[in-house]
Every structure is written in C-alpha cells, then in structure tokens.
Image (cartoon, rainbow, N blue to C red):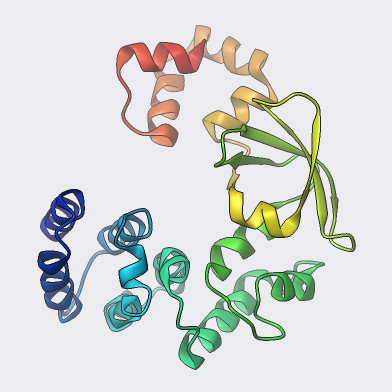
Length: 237
C-alpha cells in the first residue's frame, strides 16, 4: 500500500496540491486492492480535504469498478458517497442498484430509500452509510454515537414515526432520537463487536477475558485499533 502511505502523508501535512497530483496519478492506475481504495476514501472522508474533494471524488470510480466483485465495490462506495455532493445521474443509478441488491428484502425498504434521499430523488450524499445504519436498527441491536454518547442499544424503533429510543453508555436514561439525526450521528455495531459486547453483556465479556485474555485483547485491537497497554487496561476496566 505504498500509495496509501503517500496519501496519508500529504493529508497529515495538509498539502492539497501534492495530494491532488497523487490522486490524478492514482486514478489512472490499472488496478488497486480493495483495502487500499477503501482506506484512501475513508481517509479523505475524515480529513480537511473532504470539502475540496466532494466534486472530484467520483473520478476514482473507474478504478473502483476494476474490483469486479460487487461486495468489494460496495465497501469502497460507502465512503465515496459520504464525500460526494454532486448527486449525478450515474451515482443515483449506482446507489439504487446496490440498495436493491442489499436491502430490497427489508420490511421497511421503501422507508429507507425515502429517508436517505433516493426515492423521491433528493440530495443523497451519505446514502449508503445511512442505509447500512437504518437496515441495522432493531430492538437489541447496538450502535456507536459519534457525538460523545458512546455505545448505545436500540430499545424501540418506529419507521412510521421516524423515531428510535436508545440507551447509551455515557448518558442517563433513554434518549428518543429521530432517524434523520441517527443517520448523521451513529454507526452500526455488530453483536460481536468489542464495544457491543462490553455494553450489552459486560459480565460475559469479563468472564471470557479471565478465561482467554489474549483472545479478548485481540478482539479489542481488531475493533478499536492500536492501543497502548494502559489504554487496553482502561478499555477492559
């Protein structure tokens, strides 16, 4: 992933001109691994360059399509749609085709399309990540709140009212949140995710950590990224 390191270097240095030179060169590549493409798009999405890239990010689409595997393409499209703000016909049709493939069997599929701006067609920036969240939501499922409330559990859900009730790790009592706000502030967590297990069933996680501490630490590092020994201890406390 030599290109990725170069991109990350220019993002960290906030050197837009060098970043754009690399971007144009990269987009003419014959092939690129999914992991690199996805990591690059996520890095752009989370950087100060996002506003400058919102009208250019789709120039990487031909390179994304070289992946061929629909699931690999979709993984790269999620951060791409978080960045884009052109809402072109090509991006619209592409989003609909992936929505149909992944979510058409969901009982609230039409509601999901409406909420993310795909039917009727509106601004659909972030549509794919929003669909992932909405399709994930149901009682007993877990999310992560990016505004400081940390891990949360879905207690109630109503697509009719466009509302959900959550209990969060860092708040007192249940919180009612509109689905629109949830789309802007939350990420889904799988049942096996370290944070979901720590919040949903801490006793079971603690027992597993006593029995097989290496396994639990590996799970923590996989889900939360690199940590120091002190940080690992804090997460397990």
